[in-house]
Image: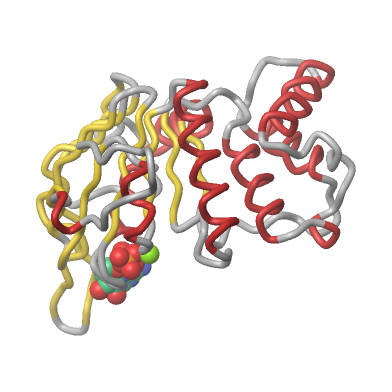
Length: 240
Ligand code: ADP
Ligand code: MG
């Protein structure tokens, strides 16, 4: 589970500081997706950076699978991130020269897993199959569509069985049908693998797909009420 308690994050801004995240609280249970929306500049990516332990908050507590990430050394935080957190950022680019399988194997080497090469290759191939790229394990990014590249990004984030999955605007470059597919994939993987998933999207139409829904306004995090969520995708109840 992912637990954020009273998180505040500020950045230098001229003579003063800008508050990117203002006393935010959020709990994401295993096997559930928390969907986060809000205007550009409201602090969504900043909150994700804190949740991913990439940035230390000014104050507040980040708990990843029972470990307080805010009271450990930078080195321990980096290890926690490698071992327990999967990250899909908008700008998480694939390396042009590597095949889909190799993109995942590079991650497997970085995460310090004790698995040998053959075991990592099996894990990579299994994940690529799960995200629907079983026929594209040898494909390089240029040979893949935008949606397929995003599937590689998601599979790569899942190498090493993370407890927490952090996803920032995974569908911003995709059309509606592709967006729905990618979101459905993230929801299914979250259920099947038991991750606590925090996903940012500016697309309100996707919100009914998530277990809990939240919005950010000027750094403040609040629940998204049903009246603010469009009557959703047929057959999928609005929850949260
Ligand atoms: P969102 O993802 O919702 O668009 P961000 O988290 O990127 O919002 O930004 C929130 C606020 O924090 C904005 O005012 C932005 O300018 C500021 N900000 C974000 N990252 C930095 C940074 N590295 N340095 C200074 N200001 C930043
Ligand atoms: Mg952002």
